[in-house]
Image (cartoon, rainbow, N blue to C red; front, side, top):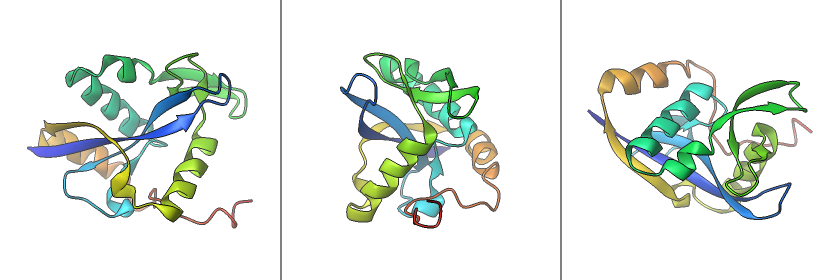
Length: 145
């Protein structure tokens, strides 16, 4: 069994301006490097986080993860949503906010929303989907602007 940690990020909703918690990462307990964390842009990761939140009794947070249509992306995808107005909290602006946060604060200070033992096979199946691509933060956004 692998102890898996779900991390959140306190974020201001673009639509209703209220504080909302977005699920941004999962990682094996003890992992401290962002390269070892699995990030919310991978929908298998977000699905695992939703499942772990439900299994640990955090149903309102779990229910805020669902498929929504994004005008920017031009399609629907599994996404974080505001707990107050249900507006999609898009991957791009959320990722940028997490990156900005990581420039000033250690990622280990992101709130822990749930911790649970997961079968090794299930954990490795999700982690293997990351392949060789880098999904960790921080990264520089200057190259992308």
